[in-house]
Length: 293
Length: 338
Image 1 (cartoon, rainbow over the protein chains, first blue to last red):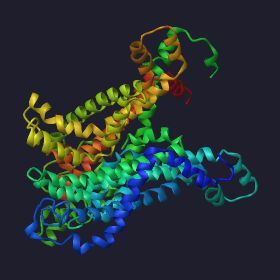
Image 2 (tube, chains in turn red, purple):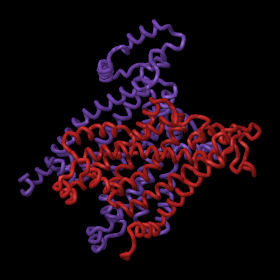
Image 3 (cartoon, chains in turn blue, brown):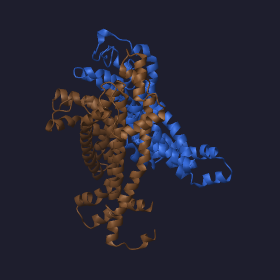
Image 4 (cartoon, each protein chain N blue to C red):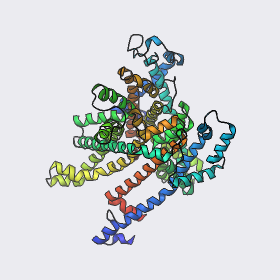
């Protein structure tokens, strides 16, 4: 590594060498562009407008991916769906990460009964399989996109808490924390200024991977009818609407499914790549976590 | 702790540190006791969820035309007018007597509904687990043994795709291809007892197990590679053992430890995934029943099913821990030190 390089430039150089991570980044950037483009070419009133003459029409010049069961353009709805999927992925991770990080920091830093109390509650939540907990919470709150996001966010808090707490326990033993304590820094200062910056790498990696979990789970909830409701075009909802017609119009369910597949793959590649660069230790932790979901 | 320095007699090791030793059962019993507060918390959470659900169960049971007096009467009968914690206590007492209440829509006891649908889900989960471990083991071993060859690269590409594939979409595509066009497998229902049942579970079982086998194969590949690069494998090679014997007799045994743990933990993913898979294939299990109940706002059924699945998941995790202790002596000894 040349000495003149800034850390960011060095990181980018290593990142570019990781082929899968680059593929992931490309997919995510395309998805972002698609979501941005949807604001211009696929506004809400266009994606819900029905053209009865075009019901289940195949691909054509005016409708590149054909139309759905109510004569709505599939491509435009797909674009609008990318906006929702990104929104879901990011907000779910934001909810889980914010609450999980706060709980994990407090739990790991203070230890003692605070730690026991928080971790026992986390254990109770982890007694439910992730998707089951999300279904139950979303089901009880009532079906809507907002409730699905809330449910997925709540259901993911425990796993963040666990990971953050684990990291905090090891960081807290390091000498720089000890010297901060000696220098008379208060608890909040130690947690925010000294411990938290060392968690960012882990959180970035884990958060990226959890975006794909969230997108997939939301699609599942919407497919079951527990998430977004008609006429909001989310990928999961599109699949469940087209299901009745799929035996005679098999091509129509291809596009929304592929959209989910490619998006999830993109975030997985990006997250894996970031992990190899930022936090190889996490491989083990997440190997144990990922299987439970 | 001084005992660690003493050379252990064979009898001692059987009784105290062996795979089925007294000590191991004691550790297992401790774990079981530790589960009690967790399960109590689980029941509290499930019960609490009912109370954030909008709508009044009594009103839902009586329908829109019921008079206010009837509703008040039924609320009293169901105990809904009592304080929250009293209600929780009564509910918990009922659960301890295997009474999960009655369905709001059909008025049937929830335990009866669960007993009717649970076997189907249990069978499906077993089939999915079979696919997951079999494919996971084959792909993982082949990938590790042929590391960084064309075979390995293709296998890993396939696992990446399957890991990212939404199960319900895969199910729909399989229904179109294998159910509708090729007519190899039935596309919905559970079939008649016997071979027909197994035939009905092939597609849903495969779909349900997909994410898991892809994940398991990745785990096994990396643990296998780690083991294959260790000293004792080099020794085995130097001794001139055959490649097959090295892989299957020496390497696999150690590489399987994380595989077994993750397999057990994947049960949660399978139970959660069963809800979607069963709905896609119209499979009459507990998962599709739960979705039906959620959409019909039939809270007692949802409560009962969530509770059952959480219990099964926790019990399975305990079993995994015990298996883990049997497989790995290091963990047994750590358990002893605690």
